[in-house]
Picture (cartoon, rainbow, N blue to C red):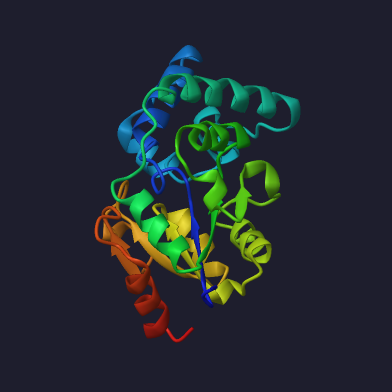
Length: 223
């Protein structure tokens, strides 16, 4: 049994509420380099952004090549150390995914985070065997809000992007999903509804969310 649509999840703020831990890691990293930061600045320039954008913003210059690779690895290693014992899914997620799989829905993860971050979460949660597509920052050349990661995910899943439902929590992520032609459900873990582009639906968590509700979203929007 296979349904005529697929579901693709972002990771940070969508599978797990990692953003508070990314804040801790970025603050420690920036403090080490003598750069002041605030939660307000993180909201504007960190959540949902690629590391290349974040480093450019805080260091006020382009950071590329080996220097970028080194700085990104250092910051993300800090995050993994901080988050290692804290990994847990957003409430209701695992039950929701079980319902999708029971109804033949193909699923994937499409994150702007590095592969090692995704590996950490996949090592702690029973998700790997349920996903037909796993893409991280290393798998694309253009990061969100560019739609590349969602277009590649749809290709991996063998389903038209217009027949995909994307779960996203950030402005750039929602924009990427919409630009790919997918339907987007906004996950309000980081931003308020009015702070995101218009989505096809919104959730605070996955409690009570079912295959049938996603099917209804798909039906309402004419897929």
